[in-house]
Image (tube, helix red, strand yellow):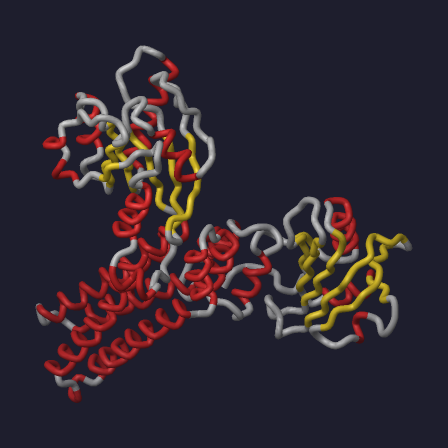
Length: 458
């Protein structure tokens, strides 16, 4: 269990800092109501401490005789709160000075400033959320598209948690059967034991593999597709960026080498966030600054999830074009033949096997076909249709891989009719690996790191 003092009371600003209609200071802990009661003067009626749970009261927040602000105070008594502790939320006027004055009054009255993610950490430690649901909270906050938000909401509702718990129960049943067979060999039918374990492991392993298969889709929904526009100078890379974001973000000229730095934009294609990166045109150059941009383009292409390789249809293929085709051949890529509104001079026999898309960035021809190709490449089959992208980060994916490895080891042990002790050890390891996902068997420092990435006040 994490070494966290749940006896103290924490407070933080739970709304973005800056000018706005309303700001909220959240207080959670055993003294939350007592602290708020000392500061809040209702316009009429009972003191805050005597009021019912889940009510809102209007009045002034006063510290040492001075009014900090006119406020609405929400009172929520444990255990029916976000943290399962007493929670008070003070709704004050938006603006840095107003909300800071309220927070300072709360801290001087006995609360301490919450750490990033500490409210959600308390919800986790108090059993209201498991780790998959806690991580879903930050995914909802950071969601870039409706699909990423919907997938996170399903995790928050406990869908992933229920799947993992069911798989762990199946494994636990198998472990119990093995342990009984070891302890009471006179009652054990070895053939039946191996057969039963093999059937159970095949079932659990298939479900784990299904979650792994959906993990890349979940990551794409959550993080976006890192997409690099690649090509030699003046093929239309910056024009493509401007076309898809529908604004003049990149400078477009006929002068080679205009784009010397990296431009990055986020767009939404069918619910998929696309991190679109316009790079410097790749060519041999003596310009020191342009040379740096070219090298950066090559590196980005190696790291990209998707390469959009642009060729100029109005010109003949060059050795630089061929080098870029070779550079990107082991990546997911889409070949775009641009400037199809002009007379075509490109040798089609060299690129016909690459399944290119013919576009004219100038007239928007082929842009919708590009969008459809991207969706086909990254949203395939039942995973996309059934929206089963429940795994959204590398931590959970790695835990699934470890569980799958141990389950595969069990099947090998069964096939080789090795001692049942080996089966029990691998099943236990698979059980622990799945428990890392929900937080039931995860080390303290890793959990701390997860919550440290939350925003302050959540």
